[in-house]
Length: 412
Image (tube, rainbow, N blue to C red; front, side, top):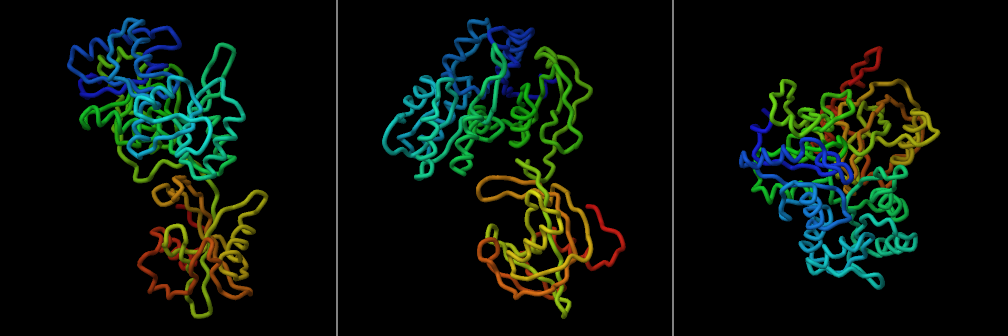
């Protein structure tokens, strides 16, 4: 049975243990059975509003045995994160309990003056003035931290805005990407694993594929989805696919025949998926044009994004002119490339993008070669059998496809 596969159980609260103030059927009995088996249990929640003690008191009121040390919250984890980084003055958008969590670590929540970080949690009484102040602090150098990314949650009168909605407003205005503490990001999982002694037999149990399952798999952990409405994803390598689905925690003590092993698919989970273009351009000597990227220092074929209202051919002509000063004409489509193992890129900002890239064969019609110094530091032609060693790993295949002279475009 599933309960025998693991020594440490990381269990989400709302949606797994209870909904609102009602205990879910079987959750108390399941926790008691795991404790009798000698299993370690930690409760992981993305709710930044309350102290660990308050969550513990709620479970006790509902009849579930628990200790404060078993709770891992984004507020408590954020306080430890700030303390480790020597941050002592912060602007906080959040509840009194969140501020108290910081005070427990010797961190002062300030409303005026300079601060070292802005921490965005959830507070239904947050004002636009606080949000604008947070933007100014971040623009002046304060670290931008979010307790969790959840955009909304169900309320008595419909969906209510959650932390992520406030975070996105500040992110859009400040043009900064925050450090996110809660699921599916690593800090809370790392805190739980540290408390559990980094056991290899650890599993996350949650009701959200986008936070619980994705977050666990990103940290190399198995994940069990408590699912009452069917949720499916088409790609077998989707990080949000659980190892197994159950409807109640009591199914941990039944035999499961549909368990699927989780294996790292070899690429980081992307934040967005975007269209991209690239070009193979040969000079009269048969040499190929390569550019050295500013963001990663690697050489590669000229490439870029497709902007709104552009065709893909307009995009590649524009990108080459902007980056290298050359005017080109598109001759043919070489191929369409979408394999995530080579097409998911991580940027210094932390953003990860999965590109669907169209590669074109282009000819030079004018201009003079130069590097724009913004996106590319150097641009030069190379013999196709003497390419630089620090070349983007997928580009030799794209060059080979372009030189193959096949009548049809390839799809990889």
